[in-house]
Amino acid sequence: MTYNLTALVTIAALLVYFVMGLQVGAARGRYGVKAPAVTGNEMFERLYRVQMNTLEWLPLFLAPLWLFALYVGDRYAVALGLVWIVGRVLYMLSYAKDPSKRGTGFMVQFAAVAVLTVGSLIAIVLKMI
Image (cartoon, rainbow, N blue to C red):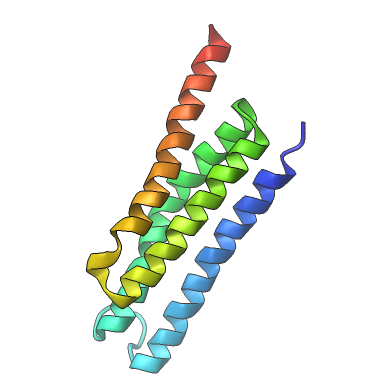
């Protein structure tokens, strides 16, 4: 079995993170926040937190994404991976506008990770028995 689609979703998730990093870099210049500072302008801080929060979630997403692909199926992993990406983009857009509105995007990506993690665990245990 090949996992080409899961590989593509992995690259897509990393590209989303890369774009967030570019936004943070551009915001440094736009708002005059010189490295290594991570505070000084609210808009910069919002973009920075989105990038850092995404970094914090990447391992929680990528490991179960691949386990799910291996133990459940590539296409199902891809569908959940795309849901995670959509959740992160929603999180980014809402957090940049108003941090108090980030909940929907957060819950979408959280739900995707929860299904990937629990689904992987169940599939692994079932293969062991």
